[in-house]
Image (cartoon, rainbow over all chains, first blue to last red; front, side):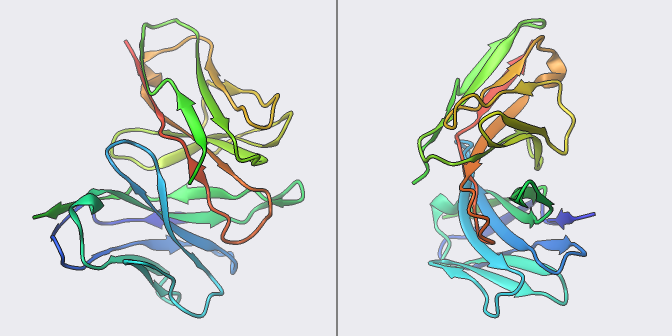
Length: 120
Length: 115
């Protein structure tokens, strides 16, 4: 069965420093996608970055980068130059490619999240 | 930016009441989803829909029901609320292009408390 594991319940980081949030996954499917979402205290889920299992390069989006190590089945999120507004829950997710009714269901399986607190 | 809206934002209600959580999106997305999230926990898929008149149960069993009569609207109903239903409910949608990097757009959620 597919599974996402985030082993860090909470993290502290000083403002302007970089921080790495860990994510490991388990799947027997060779084709999969990995996502990171941010959930601030307001509750909505905000998409940050995506990595496909066949992508040759690590994904980057502004201050976010994904350290994708396929052999280790890890997809860690790196946030550079942390800002106070980065304080939030961060969820790693994997896309289920189970085919049904003409296409993938696009169901996302989520980890338990990491609460990041950025300190001034 | 995502155009997906959930109402109410917060709901406190007594046991046994019937409730409907509203979710609407203006992006014309075919696929819509309901996730349930307990505090500090991961999201669990409880319902999804591929399009009008299509609904499926998710990975987490739920006593709630959903309907999809219009593309933009995906309400969730609890016929008789119980304290065990207290949770945050997040609605999401996505395009139906089947692209590998197809992402979900989420609403702000409804925090339900059943007393």
